[in-house]
Amino acid sequence: MSSSSCFLFLAFFLATVYSQTACLSDNQCYSSSVNPNYVSCVSGACRCKTSLGFVGSATATDQCRCDAPYEVVRKSEVPYCIRLQDAADYKNQGLRNATMLETIADYHNYFFWPAVVDVGLTLIANTTNHPIYGLVAPDVRYRIDGLGEFEGVREVLTFPVSQHLTGQAFTNQFLFKEFVASGNAAYGQISQFYTLFTAPPPNNVTKVDAYNVTHHGKWEFDNQNRIKSGDLSIRNLGWQISDVFESDDGSIQNSYKDLTCAVVVFEGECTTDKDPSGQRGFFANFSDCRSHMDLIPYGKWDHLRAQNVLCSFFHGIGFNVDKTLNRCQEVCTKATRWCYNRDATTFYDTGRDGSNVYRRIGSIPSGSRKKRAIDHSLKLEVLANMEKNVLSAESYSKYKEELSKRR
Image 1 (tube, one colour):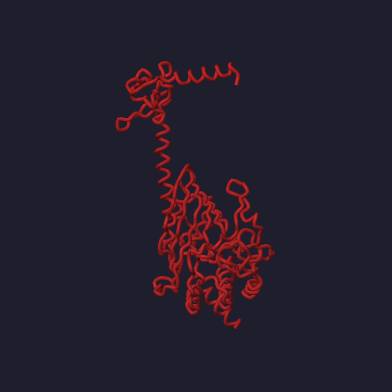
Image 2 (cartoon, rainbow, N blue to C red):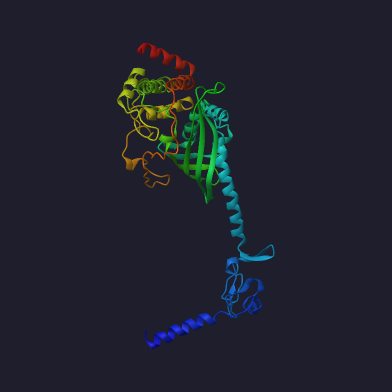
């Protein structure tokens, strides 16, 4: 370094040091501030209390102060240099954060049985006369890893309502953990604890299994603090859920294939007379559906976005509250949104904002739950009662008549 460079560096250093007023105590800094409460002596130099919002260099020519549009507000005799609008915004955001978290809790609490029955009745009647409709935006969209995308209030509500409607898989508790909120979004995880009975209430006396499912992710809200989107993943769904519904037993699998076709053909009425052009891929009759189910994989619970029996069964259960042609198409042979095979990179096509979103398909067992070995007779009992409760009396009668012809 040249001598001239050294001189310039030294001059800059001395100017920096001596631009601050030296001190041994706070009272020696008062001339460096417009108010003695805005300055303090720190490590032998006067410093403005920047942590409280005050600005300046703590010198006679650049005193510690609170510049407009900021102003001094005292709390417990401590002065703060703030902009009142910022304080109001901070308070309002805090109130909004609390509201968003409360909305998520209120939304899920409506899925306890029997409260969920009232929500189901509004879906069946195609009305919105229930408080839950004030918690979700009309154009709400949910994307749940492993299950699918759900568009609009009707689809978003049908998914949980149809699964809880009978009370046979009884939700004991929703546990909300690690939730934070910021801006227009909330983040966290929800553990849902189930008890599976052989029969729904009031005959739910024989417990078959207990398990929990944890989903975590992000909820976004509109300017009325209604849920406008959910982007969620379910941890280890295939590992956690009871193996009553997923079995290597051929007879159990055949029974679920039968029930799936009963749900699709009799309850959903997804038959070719409603699809004369064949574009939607509806079935001619129960036997046509049953032949299709024998040709496709049985499936697994952590991959319900593919053409398999469990996908058609899972989404077909929704016919108990939502009998639409679009739902029919998704559980038959020409699905375009739920039960069709896709490449992993197109598991989700786009995000809500139109951006590409890629997700891993399936889940990895964590070993957190050792599945019980469920007795075969209990599985059959669960299935027999499920048939009566996911099918109307008329559909159940047609189903039993069809089975008697096949045997």
